[in-house]
Image (cartoon, rainbow, N blue to C red; front, side, top):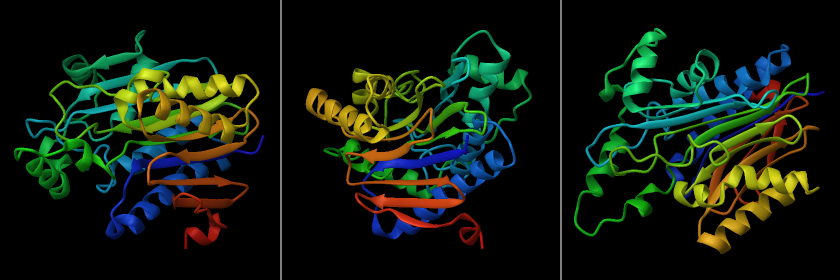
Length: 310
């Protein structure tokens, strides 16, 4: 099996001044994950490390760069899933953790549970030796400014959310194992304790070696209503291609609950797609040492992975 990795940096509307930064970020994440796969590494580690790259990039709404809740604090969600045995780990409403995706993997591997939240997740992180960081270190001026604007009367947090999407990755390794990982700071000016789709298995992501893997982004409440990740994989089980299944899932979410978003999908044979119903979604993929990247609908640039690293 030839390895493949696809990453996304969130669906929405990206301001022109940030486009190149988004392209660069998803490229770096995809190349990082592909390096692991090319060296014989497993899909689970590849998606985890790809998401870490995006969590560490202040341009994206995950880890450093996460949006703020109504009290001006960062609360983050993350999920990771192994398609080999359907094990999964997730965290929600976590604070002061630089890389929530790493904590989610520890939940999967070190506990009998699948989701830890808030105080429990924090206690578990301390028990596992994950250092806390000052919450202010995760906050960018961009996030702070959006938070301030949404405090004014008549503001629309959903409108200001545009361009601040979830990040994620899916991959298949040389052994045919698939995995997904998704991480987010959530919705700007959200209520304290709000948990979106990301940490919910079957909504924010899903992975099953028999079908494929998917990571979602977009309006969390809409994604949860239709369990978008599992819905698209169901369409694939029924015989649809990754592209047709992704379009069918996004169309259903739009017609049924008027929700918009985006997905990255890979199936058990390595066929993949990146689809979105929003204005834009930054994404990148690496297959056969070729780097694919896009932001706009119909945009699909292809360059050699080697030249992209120079």
